Length: 173
Image 1 (cartoon, rainbow, N blue to C red):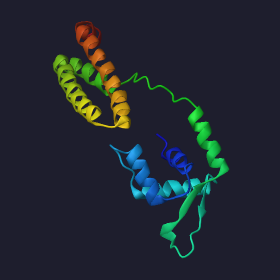
Image 2: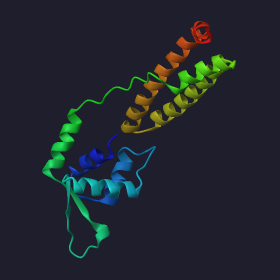
Image 3: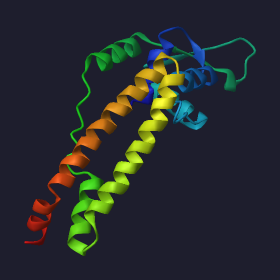
Image 4: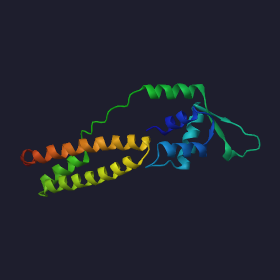
């Protein structure tokens, strides 16, 4: 996700201090990976340099109390970003596939690799399901997204396990 666009989008609600932006970002998007203050301020400096935000001065406030406001160019930039669909990530060369092939090439049991990965996927799915069931709507949607991806991975694990002998024959040929 573009942190800059997220901060710009948050600024569309009105001018804010960097601290307030970090807190809002972390509450809405950073449950698993909160932003560092340094990242917030370096991103704001870049947005300021690019003319997407401006600083509103506060009488008597020190430099650490800058209030940032989105510019018209920033509003246009966010609108363009929102309108642009994200490129789907097809995962055509995954680490897991590489591990399966290397297990076959080196005489390790590829089924053990698949089983260990299946167990880890199921563990994470149980954790995400608990989080989703106890969470607010944002947590539910975030967890559903992750769960759907993990379900697709599980399907791939099953298909690969069913075809492991064919793959072994091709890899060892």
